[in-house]
Image 1: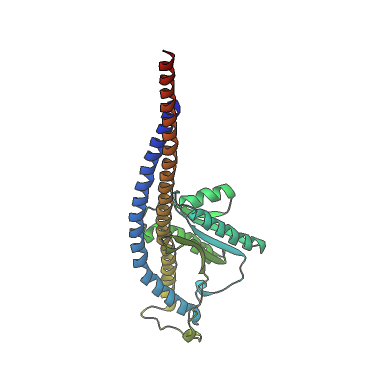
Image 2: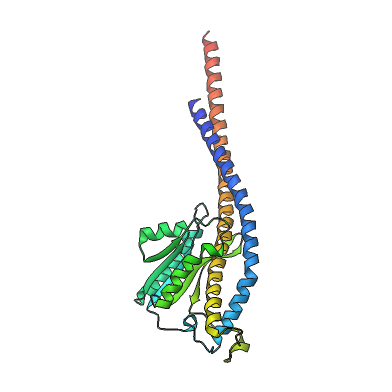
Length: 287
């Protein structure tokens, strides 16, 4: 019966693990819904900002802001958004693979790369593989604010204005649905002109009460902060969705393993009972 006891202990251990994974699945589902709500609330503002900035990039403004000017690309910066914790399937791995592939393409063109990292997983990864890291932010929690990201954004904006980088990209996960999250790399600087056909002519805004420089400096900075913030909260929704799916898969796998071990335990127990009965019968026959 020693084998049966070992199997029974394994079954109990797996059941305890199954309780944990089921609880983590439920917690992730609750956090995902909250993250989706935050993501949906941020979309109208981000969408309007993208539209306005797209118009500005298409125009010939009276003040040629550096963020609107295209220049030869010799140095590129990346803001890379990952999660702080694991247990979320291949979410971070897929994103980092995409980023590394993109970085190799720039390296092949002899372009220098600078990084700004959001999330502990990105920090651990690039500490291992190497890279020029200008700044890092982590442990932002499940409900970060724009204020938590201003420092990271300012580092890259200052680098762009100083000429340390000539283009800036944002790498994060896009929330498609609960079962699918896609890595995406989006150009942040220089700003991309609008693709709307009705804007394919040169025009400009009228700025009141201040001049174009004062307004554009604030507006374009807020736009970039909004883009990074949107990427971070969308990545959080992706993280919780991926964790929920991963924990459900772990719970289902535990149930299958328990079922298999239960069958083995029953067979071992039956064999032990049969052996004892055989010994009793044999003993009785001898008497």
